[in-house]
Length: 155
Image 1 (cartoon, helix red, strand yellow):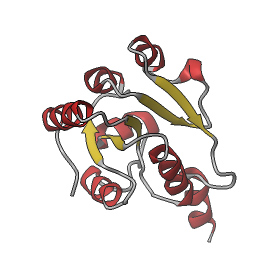
Image 2 (cartoon, rainbow, N blue to C red):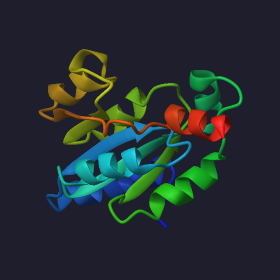
Image 3 (spheres, rainbow, N blue to C red):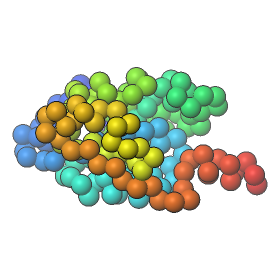
Image 4 (cartoon, one colour):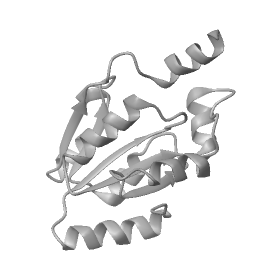
């Protein structure tokens, strides 16, 4: 599995960079993985050589989404994400935003989903400051964790 702590992540990313690999970074809660997540991650992977996923910790998800989230424990979410062939590395972060992690890793590309615009992407200006690119990937319509939860509850 490719779930590592921050120190290991920095070392691995530096090794990849030394080997001229293009590093793509994205982040999220990925609480209930669905088709929208899969297509988003596949699209992100196509933008570079290595895809690093910053995963919000349990506490971070709870602060951002409120009770009863997260539905799945951070280790469960990390294992599920790391099993996907397009994901090269998963690192859990405790903060509410991935800004510190982004600044530590200095990815070549920062990717976010279609519910963001450049000005609302945490870390966008920092990534551009070292020559990186910020890419917004359109959402797959009709898919989302909230929609899935509503569908489950309505049944």
